[in-house]
Structure formats: structure tokens, C-alpha cells
Length: 180
Length: 182
Picture 1 (spheres, helix red, strand yellow):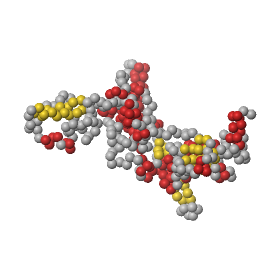
Picture 2 (cartoon, chains in turn yellow, green):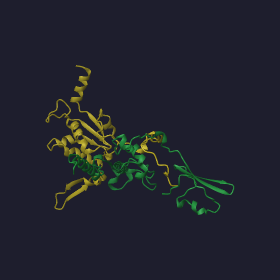
Picture 3 (tube, each protein chain N blue to C red):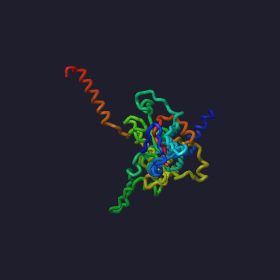
Picture 4 (tube, one colour):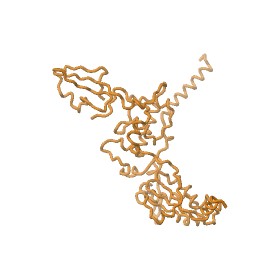
């Protein structure tokens, strides 16, 4: 067996640990990708009854992004079981209370509801920031590429870069740049 | 806004009251950041005040536009709200969009750019270009505004009626060419 084939086989039969940086990522878009790794859908030996899923460690879940007005329009439903016990919480309010909840719910609700779902969810480790315990970090062998590019702020560019960037328009002659 | 005629002003200044040059009125003796500067020289008993041009800071890196269209249309760029280096060119130092007579864009592009600028501000990508009293860190904003948001540019609707009139004109021209008698 070739060296590459041997490593491939190790990766297939071992429980790998993947890292995913959730900064500026939409959790609803990421959930199919993360489900693939959690269930082991990318492995050739996959079968619903074969326990071949991997671990996924999600960091920076506090910095997830939603499009447009989704933060206040999206509501999470909960019912206590008593009459009048229904509550609808906006996404931003839920994120205030627990910054990992929205990501966990997004992955959980994307998966098909069966007896394996809770077992698979146990392999998902979500951290609100980049402070991950060392016993978790030492297992990680792979990083899942981000689905969305992280936008650069204007302050991240140097002053020279901004000045030398090609200009589309020029000021008119009688323009006053600043009022002192 | 205060404007000065293109040719320099000459004033017999001995009679002019100094009240005119109080900054609250909007007339300044000198300002380093202006494209036009006002110079005041005292020659003998006379005070000579003149408006002098200053070279634009953008002169060296300007893209020449020889087209009839506006500079953005002729470039044919697909500008996104994350392209802060382009959007910051249409914005004053306090972050507000410049008017069309300054930017020189066409109506459609001006509307589109102003929406993109507001998107970039809401996403917290141009925090430096803001009024002095604002909180520049987007994570210190209130309620849902402190969390990261991104925008879809296809949601921008500009001048639907404008395109409709163009469409109608094309149909009318076609009808006229079919029936030249009417």
C-alpha cells in the first residue's frame, strides 16, 4: 500500500478532530458542511448504522454573522409546557444569553430527527471565543475552510495603501475638505 | 456652503471689520485641508486677501475617464459593500455621503453607492469615518447592532421607474418605426 493510501485509511477509521472558525460565518449556511464531518458522510465506509463520524471544534461562535435584518427578525420558539408558556425570543437576545446556542440549534435542526441525532451532536464542541482547552486543541488535525470571506475594515489598511489605491473621482475645484 | 469666486478677491481691508473673519461665519483666513486656500498678505497699509488653488491629493492616482458616461459606469465595476477602499472615496471625513454635484456620478450609480455606503457603515467596516462623538467600536453598539451583519447587494433597488421609462421609450420608437405615418 502506498504511503498516501495508508494515511487515508487511518483518517477513515480514526476519529479525527476538525477545527472550524465561525467568525463572520452564517450558521445556517455552515450547518450542512459541519453535519458532513460530524456524521462522516465524506468517508467511503459511511453507512447510517456505522459509527464513523468525526469531532468538530467550532471557535469564535460569538462572531457569527447574519444577513440584513435577520438578527431581529429571526425568532426562536420555546414552550414551557404550561398554558401561556410560549415564548418567541429574537436571535440577538438569545445570542446575548448564550453565544453558542444559535450555532448549536442551527446544526441540530438541520439534521434529520432520529435516535442518532443526540449522539452525533455530542461530537460538536462549540466555544464562544478562541480560548480552547489544551486537551481539546491537541487532538486537532484538520481545519475546515471558511465558507464566507471575512470582510476587511478600512482601519485594517495602512494609510499609504488607502492613499495609493486608484481613485475613481476627484474633488471639484471649490470643494472644502474639512471645516475647522 | 461658502463659495469664493475663481479670481482672487482684492479688498481695501483697512475699513473691513474683523467680524467677517470669525470662524463661526464660515470664512477662514487659512485652512490646510482645502482644495482652495485663502491667503492674506499685508502690503503696507493694505490687506490683500486672495483665494489660491491647492493641488488635489487624489491627482496622482486618479483614473482618467474619457467616456461620456459617469466614472463608475465607464469602469464597469461590480462594487460590493465590502469594498471599503472604493466606497470611502465618496464619503466625507464624518462618514456622510457626498452629493451628486461633488461626486459627479449618474443618478443610478449615486443611489446605489449611497446604499452601499450605508451598508458598509451598518456592518461596521468604515468605523474611522464617523462623527467625533460616535462610538467607533461596532461591538459597543446597542441591542442587535453590536453583532456582525452582512448584506446582499441584489436587494438594492434603484430607479425602477427610470428603467421603466427607458423601456417604454424603446417600445414607442419601435412602434413609430413600424407605422411612420402615425
